[in-house]
Length: 513
Figure 1 (cartoon, helix red, strand yellow):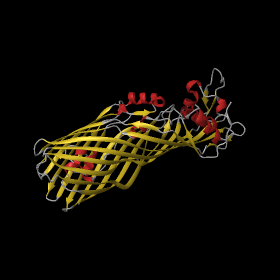
Figure 2: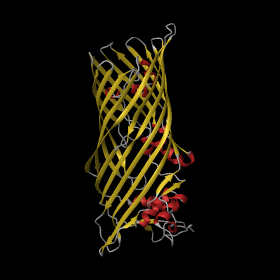
Figure 3: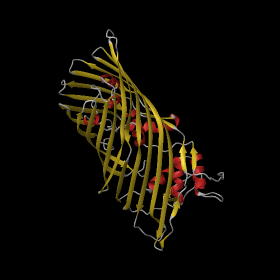
């Protein structure tokens, strides 16, 4: 027997966790190519070069390469275009944002003791928008086989089935109070069954038995050919603040360490719409819309160590290690569903199930994979340079905790994701005060099944001008990656094929102090 209680507040705290997806974990484990315009123009191939504020993010020894104090900031225009294909219907959605992408400073302290083999040390502080979450997709088409009813049926029928008495309103209960009660006492899955039941998307089977057969069936007509739309939009950022210390030993070795503070703010809204044109004597669902709003925020910590060696005057080697990032995150979720039923007698009034409750879940932790980067570069005096980086990261090591709550999900991550390699190459040609730059980037898919997400390929270019104590750099970068956007993680797992194209323009101003 359920306890009756009223909920007057629109915000509730839940001990159960939100139903995570692999893409949620990847969101905080992948970085975009961000930073100064020079860094982006060379596709981030700075592990053996240093001397750039964003190079600290690759190899913390890079700040000791500076000869003078420097301050710099970067403004960027970040645009994305998502081409969607859902059962043969193609659409495009574009987004563009403009913001302060990077700001930092480095202070160089030269050793006045000429007999010391430690030539100088440096202190640096640098902020970067490590990942821009502004994005949107719109997909629509006619699904020949599957309806979203499978999503609600999955949760209603799992673990022996949900008791129908838990899904029915009793005297004195409201949609809000019962939705909140189920979340606090039974968890996310029972809430999904409740939404489907109250919107008349699912119903107990004719042979339903509370003791031995808690089985649910769909009230969506059979026969396929369901017209479906899915709109997805997100915004936010993943910021990273470097506290850097580095030093130069003799004329050939640079050593450095970063202590990194991470902070994230992510909002996501999805709206799924379905319609069928099947009409019968029985009352059945004709149209429905299911909306979800997710807000995630939190902070994290990581560290980096690195070294750069001048093997010769021209040839340099770099090696850097980045620890996992240990995030503490919070999820807030609100949902609503509307179902419209009809028969040959006509259409009924909409069944609106809007609890107007924001679920605040217990904090949880994500440990992202660590990363190792090897680099080499050749510097042609004052004429130019060429640089190459290769980085390795094992995404199957992503771990969520408390482990007793995420044990199955962590197993899914281990079975779904894999280790990757990222290759970056950049070149620069100097013509007096003018610098011409270009770069290439290739990143393997983090998924074992590359159909889920393909490899990333990117190109970049740019130029810079040195006015003496002031430098101005401009860059353009382009990347493309294909992936499958699964609308829901359980039951109804159909989705669209997305071609994601990003274009970025960055402008950096540097001042030597």
